[in-house]
Length: 157
Image (cartoon, rainbow, N blue to C red; front, side, top):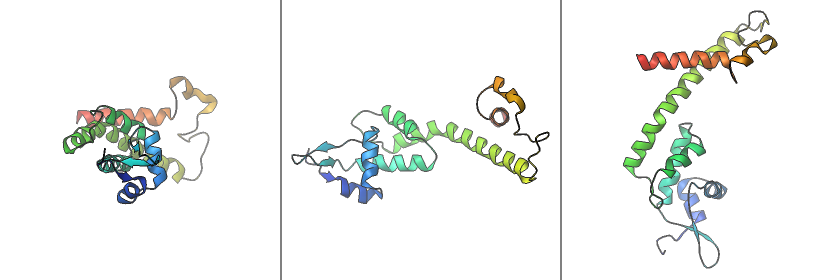
């Protein structure tokens, strides 16, 4: 276990994260450490690659739960390599495309609706008198319907 002799402070500094972030990642099962005789956490150097993947995925808008699920598909003791990253990024491509479409539609809807400044209850597209849309689903039903239509149209193109 000699190669796993990196302290939490050294890993945090090299990865550009706080020590508390490493503890959080460990609590979430994203990284692993071991304890030395003095009960101090120690890491293998390859944990830095895992942290890099976590940070890159988070910047793409991938949740920690999605990252954990992706890591669960890797052999237990192996850190993601270049081929693993290619597989992970391919898995996340569809999710990111959906998020992009959703956010674009949300942005465009907000501009059209709030841009006029009136927020008229008779013509405002976000007004939902008597919760009539509640029977059609949860959340922003009109926006979700529009986004799903956009996704289908993009897939057919």
